[in-house]
Structures are given as structure tokens and as C-alpha cells.
Image (cartoon, rainbow, N blue to C red; front, side, top):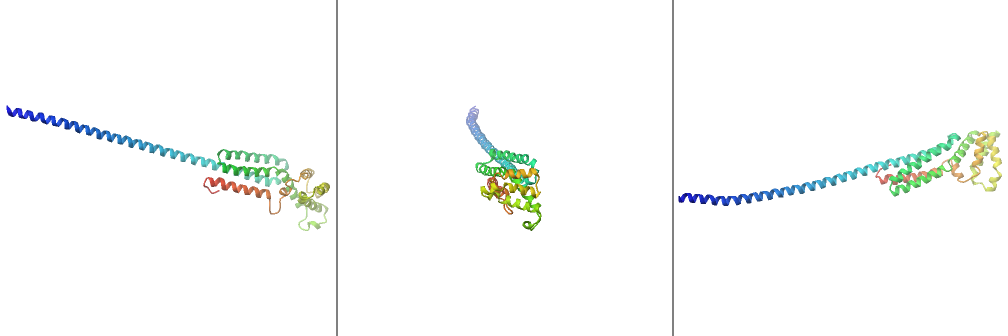
Length: 265
């Protein structure tokens, strides 16, 4: 009987010891699990934040890359438009007179439209340089029609006299062509009084040269009424001041625009 009581008491004591130990183990197990879960949550948050930051960086880089491509296209379109305008201005003397104004207007309008693209997308330094190019284009455009009349006339007169010995040729038409050529070459440098005295001589020599028809003679005389930028319109054998100034500002635009993109033009 006493033995049974002792066994019972021992079992009860064992239960009393085991239950708290089990509860304590369960408690620490839960705390460990909670800490692990918390660490997992924190790690997940950090990973999410890193993923969002990476996505934002990638998106920003993508936007910058896209914007750079759009800017590059705008700069290229502007350069193409101004180059076409200059080529037209240069070739305008060979274009039939009736078609010159429409062709010139088309190309000048294209420059204005292309410059608008640079104005929207380009940084201030690029836009400032584009404005300089546009102004130089306007300076080329303004006298372009008069310039075409003069240059086509100069070419026609040069073809109308004999090669070499032009000053000593006895053919009246060839002599007239040479005299008219000389008059036009120096017209812008004549004193006003001299110029007022010579329109009749200019008209006579132009007609006698037989290098031009009546309408072409009329156009030359009309242009001769104004001598602004005369030497620039006539140009020279080796230099063309208007085109030289245009090329200088164009080169500056290329340096600034493509330099801002880290590109080589």
C-alpha cells in the first residue's frame, strides 16, 4: 500500500515537472518561430524595397534612354532641314525662275518646323545654338531669290564670251557680255552717283550680250535697284561669305547638341 502511494506521488511529481517544461519549450519555440517570421517579414520588406528601387532606376534609365533617342532624332531632323535649305539656296540659280520661290518657301518652312522639335526637347544650351543656326538660315533665305538672279546671270554672261582674251574679243555680243559681267561684279561697290549714271549701260550690255531673254534682263535690273549684301550675293571664285558663316554656326550646333548626348556627330 505504501509502495503504491509512493509510485503515485512520484508520477504526480513527474507530471508537475514535465508540464511546465513542455509549456516552457512550447513558449520558446513560439518565440523563435515569431522571431523567424519577423525576420522573414523584414527580409521580404527589404527585398521588396530593393526591387522597387531597382525597378524605379530601370524605369528612369529607360526614360532617359528614350528621351536621348528622341532628342537625337530631333537634332538630326533639324540638321537635315537646314542642310537641305542651304543646298537649295546654292542650287537655286539653276532652278527655273518660276519655281524658285515655292521651292525656297518649302525648305524654309521645314527648318522652322524642325527647330520647333529642338525647342521642345533640347536643353537651353542646345536651343540657343539652334536659334543661331535658324537666324543664319534666315539670312541665307532673305536674299536667296535676288542672289539666284545674279548668279544665274553671271554664269550666262561668262558662257556668252569667248574663253580667254575676253577683253580683246572683237565680237560685239561677247564684248557686251564681258562689260555687263564687270558692271555686275563691281555694282555694289560703286558710288551712288556712278550707279545712277550706269543703269542704261547695264541694260544695253545685258541686251546686247544675247545671254539673257527680256524677262531675265528685267529681273537683273530690278535686283540692281538695291545693293544690300551685293558682294555676298555675287560671291567670289573661292569664298562665299554667307555660306561660311552658316557653316561656322552649324558646326557649333553639332558640337553642343551631340556633346550633350555624349555622341560623336
